[in-house]
Length: 371
Ligand SMILES: Cc1ncc(COP(=O)(O)O)c(C=O)c1O
Image 1 (cartoon, rainbow, N blue to C red):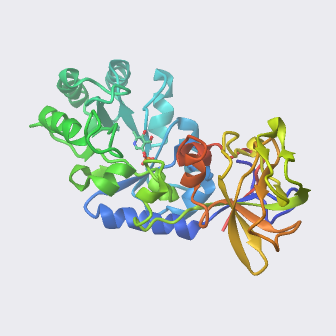
Image 2 (cartoon, rainbow, N blue to C red):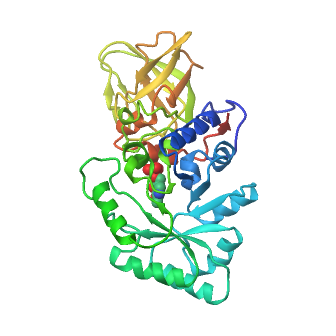
Image 3 (tube, rainbow, N blue to C red):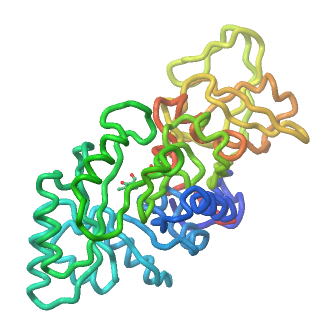
C-alpha cells in the first residue's frame, strides 16, 4: 500500500485504517487469552494495513511477529523497543549479526538453522531467544517430533533460551485432520520434561480452542477484524471490528434497457430497465476479479445507504453495481467495498477466497489514511 493520503483526492478510492478498531481487537485477544502474552502478527505489511498503523495502534502488545529482518529494521527505526519475533527465523546464516543487533527472537524450524546458531554460539555471541518449531502434523515448517528433543538439547547446550512452538493446521475446522487435539497431544508428549514457555495459538485457536493457547499466543487475522475461516458468520458474535474500510465513489451511471449487457464478456444481462453505478475500484486496486454477480457493495443513498449487488465482471479500474435499490445514488455517492457494512469475508466468499488474501492484496496505488 502506498504513502498515506489525507483525503479522497484525485481518484476517489481510499483505504482508511481505524486505530480504535485495531486497539479494540487487541483488547479482545487479551480478554480471550488473559494468561498469555501476545505476539501481534504483522507480516505482509500488517496484512495489508501498513506497518505504521499497526505500530501506532498495537503498541500495548507484548511483541510483534513478522517475516524478515528488513521489517524488523523498520520497526526499530520507528521506535519499537519491545520484542520482535521472526516467524520463519533467518533465511541465511549471514543475517545472524543483524538479527542480534535488532534483538530479534528467532523461530528455528530446521536443522540448518540450528547449525548456524551453534556456529554463532561458538564465536562467543550472547544467546538469543529462540522459538523451536515442532511439526506436529501440518508438515510445513518445523522439526518432526522425533528430531525435536535432539534439536532442543543442541540449542540448550549452546545456551539459547528456548521456547516451544507449533502451528495448527485446522484450528478453524472441527474434526478435520490433523485436529488441534491431535497436534496438541503430540506437542505435549514431545516437550515433556523440557523447560521453556510455549507458543501455540493463531486466531482460530484463540477464538475456538481455549485449551490450546500456551504462554504466547500469535493472533493475526482477528486483529484486523476478519475471520480465520473466511466466513463472516463465524466471527459475527466474536466482537471484532473491521480495521480497514475500503471506500470509493460512483463515477458514472449507465441506464440499461432489458437485454443490454455489462462490461467485458457481457456476463450480466439486464432483465429490465435498470441503473448501473460505475465505481472507481477494480482488480488493479486489489479488488478480486473473480467477484461473482451479487457480491455486496454498500452504496450511499440519500441520507442512508443500501447494499447493492455487483453485476458484470470486475475490470482493471472499475466495477459495476445494480442501483435499483439505491434510487438516490448519483455520481459522487460514496461506496464501501469492504469494512463495517460489508465484511471483507463476504466479498471474499463471493470470490472463492478468504479475507486474508483480499486485505493483503490491496494495491500500492490505493492511498491509505490512518484514522
Ligand atoms: C506461525 C504463524 N503464527 C500465527 C499466524 C497468525 O495466523 P492468523 O492470521 O490465522 O491468526 C501465522 C499466520 O499465518 C503464522 O504463520
